[in-house]
Image (cartoon, rainbow, N blue to C red; front, side):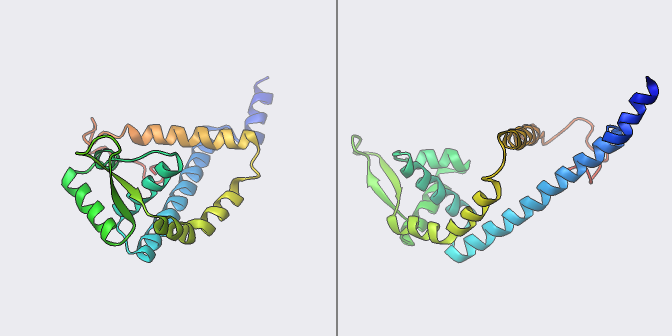
Length: 181
């Protein structure tokens, strides 16, 4: 039976070396995708004359509008993880450029909501629409099993990076750069 077991490892590549090679290939594919996405975001920011946080706020506001929700400045502060002063500066810049407006809270006269303008929605759709269509076309024909595999892999990777400790035990221990994402 040992021969049969050894033979199947040969045919199906289940040695530790094979598993590690496949893992590195997957991580490399994610690395290449992430680099392409970062470059796309940079081009988008440049074409819209916005910084990263401005674009994040605009996309967040457009999503909230699509859900029928109003967004407060404090919600944006929590979302971005920045100070209230930084949030105010971002909203000021977006308002000055015509991308957002401040509207009074419907029941609390002391509060406001921030709303993306119709023009900013149109600009984002014009800028990102074809890219979203191409991305959808790349995945729309995936089988349910393929979708489940990709989603599970992404969830495990998210969990792995969410657990990154800024001061890990064993700091200074060399890390295999090929395996790190």
